[in-house]
Length: 233
Image (cartoon, rainbow, N blue to C red; front, side, top):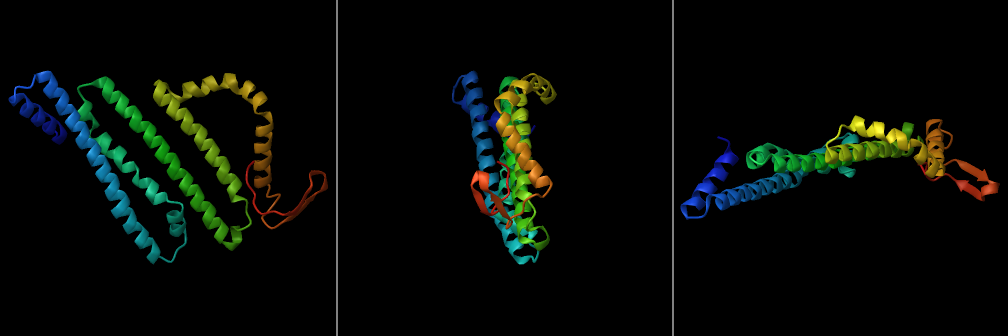
């Protein structure tokens, strides 16, 4: 028998021995299992963040490379530590909610949505780290990395929203993507200016038409000065 199942059974039998009805004892045993799982999830997050991540940061300080320093600045390791609670709940969720399929399904959905947000956060942190590294190196200092980073963040956010909706609705992401096709024409009309500005920003970044430090004059727009940042609108 699994450890968590043994714990729940022990609590139930202990309460039953005090003349507590079987149904109430079973419910309290399950609640006790939930409390233990949440405590383990918190403890795992505490250990990962306060001990493991702190140790990684100390090791990074001793290295001569700069890419790991960028990962620390963008909090990639800290964001990765938030995966531990989800791993703990996944490990013991079947033991606690195995006898209530609906509850188990709801917990699994919540954990999956949590994982989607954490993975998006980690991906954003990696993109920020790449941007920091590119800004510090001479051969890539003037490249419009920020524009590409913003475009990837936007696309990954849209993908994350689709995955969250598919998890909540219990539908395949492909099913939702096919449904979005019918709304494409409406979205193009409503967000026409925003989409055009976004595409223009991508073209400027892709063709390297402007770099930080360039001098641009646009008398019609009243713009005259140095380029201090290149990003998507």
